[in-house]
Image 1: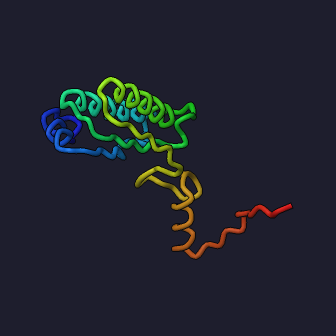
Image 2: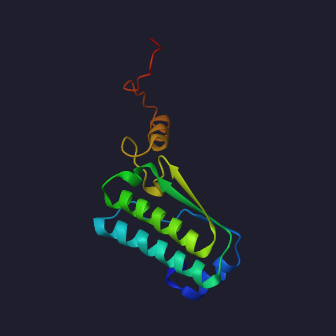
Length: 137
């Protein structure tokens, strides 16, 4: 894993003008893994940015879940705050994208992703009558 190898990570970071950070854990049997592993990725990237004097842009895929009191939400919020602080200390541009439905390969239909639900229902020819539209007054 690149984040475990300081030399490889520094080599990559020093060659970039823009980092788009989409990596992260959103589900685990152990709830502590989500927070710990996501913060590990954040800390490794921040340390590499500082070591390599990176002055480009860091675009971070956060989530609308960042204000929730669960491991995933906390990891996104804390990472966003750490990246913002690091951007001020190390003079790089930080862009925090707060995106809905960012769950990667572990999306579940009827659970955490409209897209996963739509695709699942379409492939299985399921008609969902529970979707309601708002009607003007």
